[in-house]
Length: 127
Image (cartoon, rainbow, N blue to C red; front, side):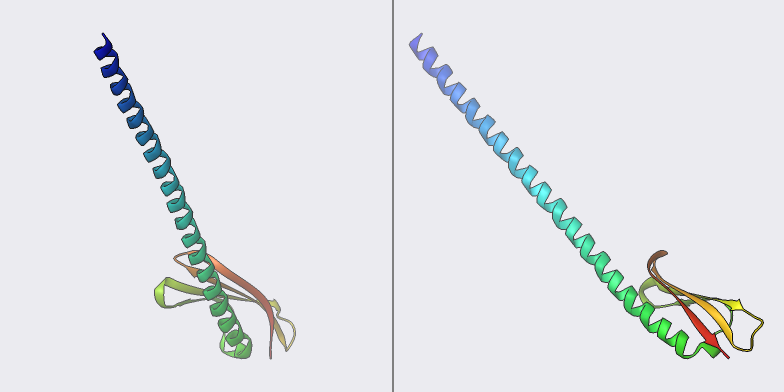
């Protein structure tokens, strides 16, 4: 009888050790999964920030070009495809057509894979 109790005690101790190991592994895997998800989210945010900065630079360059050379651009929508799936859409619409000096609204959108990252609007005077 005493031997049975000792045997059962050892079995119970081994069972507790297995449960502790399983719980420890579960907690460890949960922490790893959380950190992995956090790292992926940070990477995604960094990539979005990079795209926004690049879109701002592109928009600024094209808006300066449109304002400086406004006589070269006609009224309407102009799409310019850039490298790496970037696209610039420029919309020029007249505000008043009755005067000798035309006033035009210029809208510029920079997008990557059909997702807009930057939009600018300005008014340009054309003679």
